[in-house]
Each structure stands twice: as structure tokens, then as C-alpha cells.
Amino acid sequence: MAHPLAEIEKILTEELDLYNRLYEIEENKSSAIIEKDGGLMEELCARQEMMLPRVSRLEEARLEQIERYAETLHPVEGAGKISLRDIVAAMDEEGARRLMGTGMELKKAVMRLENLFQANNTMIRDNLEFFDLLLSGLRSSSITSDGYSEKGMDRGKKADALLFNKTV
View 1 (tube, rainbow, N blue to C red):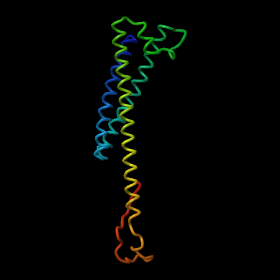
View 2 (view 1 turned 180 degrees about the vertical axis):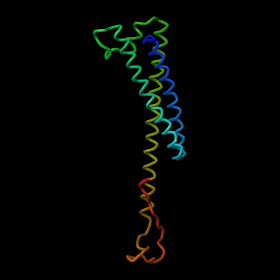
View 3 (view 1 turned 30 degrees about the horizontal axis):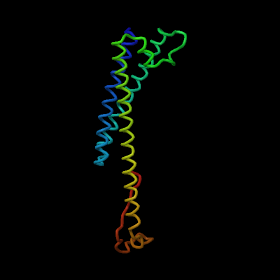
View 4 (view 1 turned 90 degrees about the horizontal axis):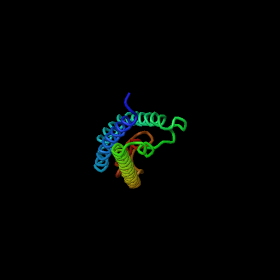
């Protein structure tokens, strides 16, 4: 079995790559939101959903390796109290710099993804509010006095008649 430090570094690198790919998809979602391309949004969301189990597995593997490494450092204290800084402190300078750099890059990638995700959510909410206002305006401008009688007979033209499906 590989040394926990080597495994932790490998996992962090994989996580960084995965979060960078998730960020690319999220950027494409921004474009899809702006272009109001629902089909593309659905495709991009499905691609992201397929990647989420991998994110979860990597996170679990990283925590497992940290726990394994913590047991070699502090067998009595337990792994719940160890951080990347604690691990780096026990490493040689070259390995510590590399592992800390990867950890910092991962943290930046996660924060960038979170910020873009929040911006996309804001754009989606703004679009929904806009369309809701637009529909409300259209609904209030239609005349309901004409149309069909109780027997289903056409009474004549209905000015600006519109039907709205709000379940979409």
C-alpha cells in the first residue's frame, strides 16, 4: 500500500483536476443562462451530476488517508484534529511545499467554483423574476369578457387572449 502522504497528494491533485472541470462546465452554464438555452443547461447539469459521486469518493479517500497518516503521527489523539498544515509540518521542505501548493490551489478552485455557482444562481433567479413579471403583465392586459359561453359556444373574438402554462 502506498504511503499516506503520497496518496493524499495524489488525491488532492485528482480533486483539483475534477474541480477545474466542474468550473469549466459551470462557465458553460453561465453562457447557457445568458442565451436562455434550456437544452444546453440540462445537458451541462447532467454532466455535473455524473461527476459528483467522484467528488464524494475522492473526499472520502482523502479523509481516510489523513486519518491513516494521523495514526502514524499521533496514535492516541485521533485523526479528527489533523489538518493539511499539520501534515505539512511533519514533511521535508520539498514535499511540504508541493503538498501545500496543491492544497492551496484546490481551495482556490473550490472557492472559484462556489462564486461562479452563486453568480449563476443569481442569474437564474433574475431571469425567473423577469419572466414572471412579463407573464403577469401579459395576463393583466388580456380581456376576459369575450370568449366562450357556459355551453362552450364561441361568443366572438377575444382580444389579446393568452394561455399560460406556469408549470414549466
